[in-house]
Image (cartoon, rainbow, N blue to C red; front, side):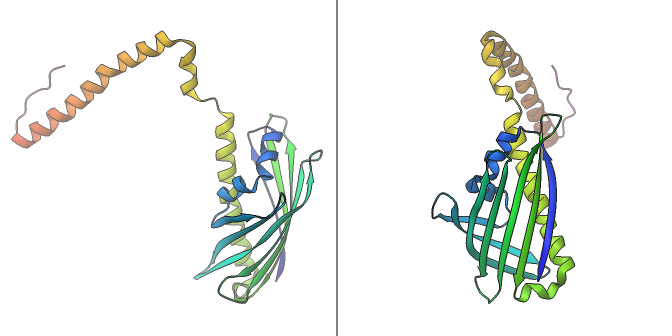
Length: 203
């Protein structure tokens, strides 16, 4: 069974950051549901595994993925993959082209075009269900990528107080009584309920 997938998503991060992410298999695999990076054979070739669930059937594949094109100017990367089912006779071949383009708001758009060829018992579920599962996996992937890259883009609030240590200490001191009062209120409510007393908490 052969079919095509075309998906796109936006990331609020600059093109170069998104591009570096997409050509780093160790980072990409973290966002692929059920995927695992087993070994890096050379700069562009990797061995991996992935588990896929379609309907009541779960399958595990192991195989090789290779970057056949990495274009720094156009921010395009092409990957081909060939995997076989671990406990069956099924197999899959994938050719995927990903392109990162700049957006007017400073973010990036990622466009993915993939040609997939499946062999084995997985095809019994039909093209519609398999494509839907593929879309779900892609949505999970894109959500994870956005979360990671956009978190890097957002300034960390912990770094701000370094410019004014005195202000940081003041805030810490001011927060201490609040924390103590909250803890005291919990203790009073606990013992009040334990002994059935209706005493009013004094502040």
